[in-house]
Every structure is written in C-alpha cells, then in structure tokens.
Image (tube, rainbow over all chains, first blue to last red; front, side, top):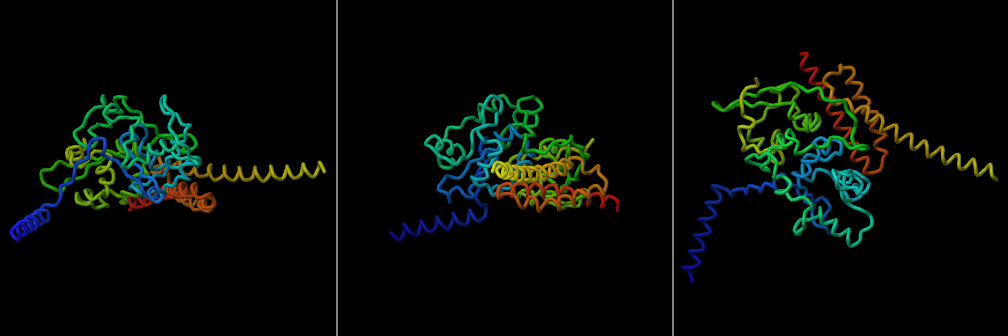
Amino acid sequence: MKKLFFVLFLILVFAGITLAQVGMKKKRPLPQEYGRSIINNYSEKAGMSPVVFDHWLHRAKFTCRLCHVDIAFAMKTGGTDIKAADNIKGFYCGACHNGKMEHGERKVFEACSKKITQDDARRCDRCHSVGKTVRKEYDFAEFTAKFPKERLGNGIDWEKAEVDGYIKPIDFIEGVSTKRPSFVIQKDFSLAAKVEGLPDIVFSHKKHTVWNGCEVCHPEIFLGVKKGATKYSMIEIFEGKFCGVCHRTVAFPMTDCQRCHTKPVQ
Amino acid sequence: MNKLAALIIGFIVFVFSQNVNAEQDWKAEFDDICSKTNYAMSLTKDEIKSLIKRCDNLKPAIEKLDESAKKVYLKRLQMCRDMFVFTLESKEQTEK
C-alpha cells in the first residue's frame, strides 16, 4: 500500500514539474468556434444560460463598423452592458433581432420580448444556448461550403469571399446608422519587422477601413497619431492588444505570419 | 366647456410636439456631427475644434434620454468625439 502511494506521489510530482515547464497547450478552436463569444453579464443572474455569439455568421452579413460603431457593441466580450430591456427597445441585438428586419428572404427573429410563451422559450434558447443542444438555423459547413478557403481561424478567406460575391456585409441600418459620405482613405504604410530576415509588415488602410471605418481602431486601439508613435511588440499583440484585439479573436489569427509580414509597400 | 376641452387638447398636442421636436433635434445634431468622422482628416483644425465643441454641447441632451438610449448614444458620441480629438492631435503633430 505504501508503495502504491509512493508511486502515485511520484507521478503527481512528475506531472507537476512537466506542466510547470511547458504549460498546458491551448486547444485550437474549431473553424466554427473561432471568434465565438460567450456573453454572461446578466444571463445566469436572470436564471438563463449565457449567450453564444457566433462572429462568423454575423461578420458574413454585417460590417464590423455597423455593430461596433453604429450599434455600439464594445470590442471586448462582456464589455457591453447588454440587458434584455435594451434589446426590447431596439438597441444592441434588438437593432436587428426585432422580428421585423428582413435579411435576404428571412425575417430576423426577435431577440427578447416582454411576454414569454412556450414558443418564446425556444426562441430564447437560440441565443441563450450555453450547455444546450440547439439546432442552429445556419450550419457553418453548409453556409461556407463554397467560400474561398484559408488555413487558419474560421478557415475562410473573408476578404476574397466578399470580392467573389459570396458575402455582401451590410454597413447601414435605417434609423440606427448615421448616413456618412464615402471614405477618404488614408495611405497604406509599411512597418519594419524587428527580427532580422522577417519581411516587413504591410498595413493597408484600405482593407481595414472597408469593414471597420475609422472609429473602431482610432483612438481606442491605436492611440498614436503619428506612424511609429505607438510602440508595440508581438508579445503585446499576442496578449490581445493592438492588432491582437481582432487578429487573435475574429480576424485571421497571427499564427498566419505571412499575411502581415509580406513585403514593403510597393 | 368645448373651448376648454379644445384648449386642453391643444396644450397636450403642443407639449407632445415639443418633445418630438426635442428628440429629433438631438438626433439630427448627433447624425450631423458623427457623419463627419469619415473625412475628419480633410477638415481644418478649426472645423474639428468646432465639432468637438458640438459633441460637448450635445452630451447633456443625450444624458436626459432613457437608460438604454443614453447608454448607446453616449458611447457613440464619445467615439465620434475621440475620433475628432485624435484627428486634431494628428494634424498638430504633423505640423510640428
């Protein structure tokens, strides 16, 4: 018996040392899970499951700017103080999920309502679905089957998907969005890589503003007004700052190095 | 008696229309200000300063809205204001 305890003790010590040295490998999310947010500001307190928000479906239909500027969703999960009452009044999720808005041939289902019936409970589950088996209206594999592919993230080249006409993200909702004239696009620029031999980074303002506008990035994410004024490292980016706000969670991940470290701007 | 009723109804309609106008006023001002973020870099420094001031002047009207509208529009107004401040600082830095 003592021997058994000794062996168990040794196994535990060995496992502890191994994990302390190499850490736990983070599981790479499945393509349909990449960009998924779990929102639980009030759900569990109200006796409901937290909300599962799939970025892949929403980004296919709406621009980032529409949701993060015009509808005022924060850039960080849980950063928006969304309450059912807000949705009912037509704010946040309720800006589209109001039972009236039409997208293509479908009517967008109502997010929250004052009166709840048996049918409504099933409707609640469509968003409040953590820990539940809910049949989604859109299946990722089916929805993206013809989309141009990429290696990482959702496994989709979203930019090309728009160019090829597979997606047409909406950038304006009547009564919600502010009518704006078209952009005065700022110049692209290159950033020198800090590691010798690594190609420079090409930053395209054009590519970023088409979905994000100006306010998504400036000044909340990129405060520096002059090129080079904001100093940041890959470590900070991997921690979710600067480019990492999106390119770690929703946009293609930073492990796809050559998509940023490409070559000097021509 | 009929006159009194007509006066009361008239008064109610007047008060209601004033509220509607007030709501339309702040929204129109908000839309006009925030519609300029796309081309803020092409505005002059004085124009940007004026927009920042208009943001500050509009804030009290938005603070009077109900909780949901206040929350959303205060954040949206702040984003517009921040963008203008950012643009102004950018222009000032470039001049140095």
